[in-house]
Length: 363
Ligand code: TRP
Image (cartoon, rainbow, N blue to C red; front, side, top):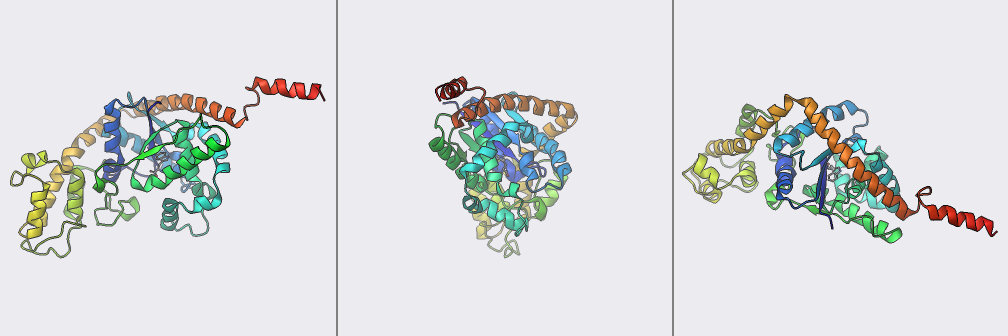
């Protein structure tokens, strides 16, 4: 079986370091593993419109931001097809047929959708398109026959929904067409959901607690220096807590042993720093200064790469156009197979015309 990856992001804002450790970094690793026959990364503008119908301009502006974030992180357009969701008509078509395989009550049980509805304060005025986005996401994944979907933890209910649709399609029409996908989560547990700089569970634009991949070194420094730590760690001598201490959570996600040799030779590894902090005698500022260096070690090359691409925006659109053309080809093929399995390929099915002709001849 072909090994295919599909994943994507909604273009509703710049990507932040939570996206990076949760998924982007993993995508670059997978891209370079050489283990995959095809890798697709989709900018999910149509999905973004399901709760931004009145603001297509925001989506339009963020398509380029997200594309720049991808390229600057090291997503290589020679190895990965980056494309724009709304440019693939087959995605709408497939979604429409999948809608018949999912019940309304199944949709309302999706925990991610539930919490998003709460966050957006939709109450009873939920757009139908928003309610159905898990179905459209199943189409995103299956149109490309992806077997692997690298995502953050919050996307697991979408994958479960996609798997159910594949099984239902298999039982109803044919099990030779679609591929049942599986999620691929980051192996480092801290990376599943990086908290915001204020210690809140989610890094989110509306909470103003993000460190963006495109932030300047100065912004990163300011944000880290004002980060939430342990509120009971008041004097340097006080013993401190590392659990729930955002500075340590970020170190768990970003720090490597070699960073100590490079930036803080007093310690050999993160555990030694944690032990000292918990014993007391290690101040927040020292740990924060180290975190800034660790983050910069990863973010500085990303920033430099972004600056290069920013100087050639037409080239970024070329990458998107080429990725989209390739995705269209693949999409067309799968859709033809889907329609054949559903027996709604009236003009391609020569048997059908013959059979119908016979039926009426022998009436
Ligand atoms: N729902 C995803 C998010 O909010 C974006 C997305 C759309 C996606 N289609 C997808 C992710 C298909 C993985 C596979 O980040």
